[in-house]
Image (cartoon, rainbow, N blue to C red):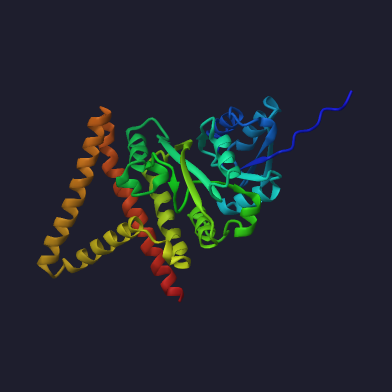
Length: 337
């Protein structure tokens, strides 16, 4: 009797991870339930030395589900781009699919991604997020709603799109390992917006990026305003660093928050000795918060839940922290020139 031929690994799912004990099993369960055959994929988790039992949870999952190949590799630099690179180095698949440790991909996620890559639709393919509340509180619900609303997301199509299209970036992404190496891997000095920076280099090298709503995943938003503020300040800070390298990638939605913060600060300063500045400031802030309140009220009525009135706080934190982080990064870089 001939020995059974081993099926080669075709897809490597790479996951940077740190202290995700609460959500890592949700991700692994979702990967196990993919329509793409388990025997043809592996999961490589780059763990940034988690301290909350994440590794123990992964090891327990491995023991219960030996049919899915899962490996843990160390990420001693403890950053997301370094984690992606470490996992990619260890991956043996032809196709790399980057996932997040607190996301839950739909069952067709891997199969659809691989099919698009095999048909050479684009060099990097990705899908849309269904953003879910990270907790059961009103503010958690409001944060998730704000992150999925054009008021908070702007024209970020991966949060709001319902049609497939070529785009500037996709969340996470799926690409050939050869493409990943050719473009130059993830920039480990770019500690946030690392996906966007990689995709900017991909596009500048002639590559294309395809967003397809059939590639769907659930993504858990931050639970509270403190965590949201840190997240968006970091986004703004590193966005300027990325735009400094690739100024042609600037989009209108990215310019609005820092301009709004700058104008507000300028008007506050001028208000101390110019009455017209006080009037303009009052009109600006009045209109701004009126718009936030109106959209929050509409969302509350539509969802029949007045928790969503708190979107006004979530959107304000997003705008203020993103814009402030961007301006701080601009001033920080200017001092070093």
